[in-house]
Length: 75
Length: 268
Image (cartoon, rainbow over all chains, first blue to last red; front, side, top):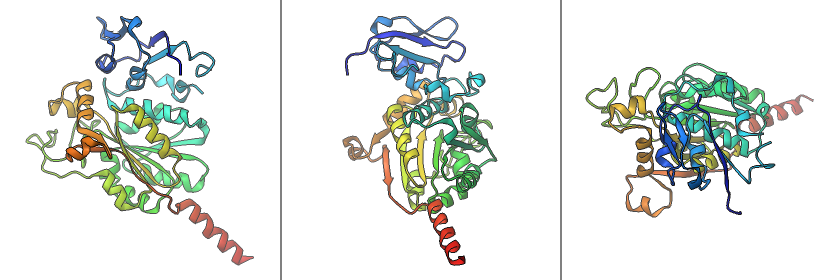
């Protein structure tokens, strides 16, 4: 599998409850809580597309979109 | 189908507290269903009462929200009348093993083709944090302000002894492993039990000073080890994770069908 490149991390602000799980377990510290206690992307360039935030999010609010997603999973 | 298509998005954001492990289990479960390429009309989700039982309202499949502890009983009825459907039964620890304890062991004894998912947060969250049969000794709860003295069940050993043909354990922290185990459990023909350790930061975490959701997940990481791993051999106090039983045993609906066939032949 070729190395994936991040296109976008989409965070649904209406669904996010700011529990901080994604922030705590991100291996490259891409995410942070903002003033409204919602998760936001601050360092997208550091993202390694491991998708652990997307898989662990208890609010199902995060979606990691990479260059390999097109045509495969995103129907 | 995309993962989000398995959700009833109009009910989101869900009612679970910030950092609740049940949300992560829902996340793993819909990814497992998506991985198996099951269609929503092929799945029935039956749940009882409690925080965990609310999961059946959030999935875009056939769903039944039944009585406290009776999810497996209702699921047995669904499965016997429509054996071609995949029946998933997510339950909480109290729902599965206190109120529904009898249904649990007897469903396992029959080895009926259901997937029982025990979302174990070791507390009754919805009613305000009473201790459950899976809390264990030395736990603080609303009903045990000076810590519990009750021993807990070991779901894996209980399910094994009762006759379940697929028994596994995972956690809300080990999401990839959890997804793989759920996939295998859903595909398994026979009664499958998957215990998933979950976190309740609101009641269990606060009373027992385990901190926020992230630190409770760190605790799950620290306290568990894969079966057959070196860590588990060195420290038997760790909770084992993985697949404990995967047997090919006579399944209830198939046996029932055989009885009907043999009786019908005699008549003719």
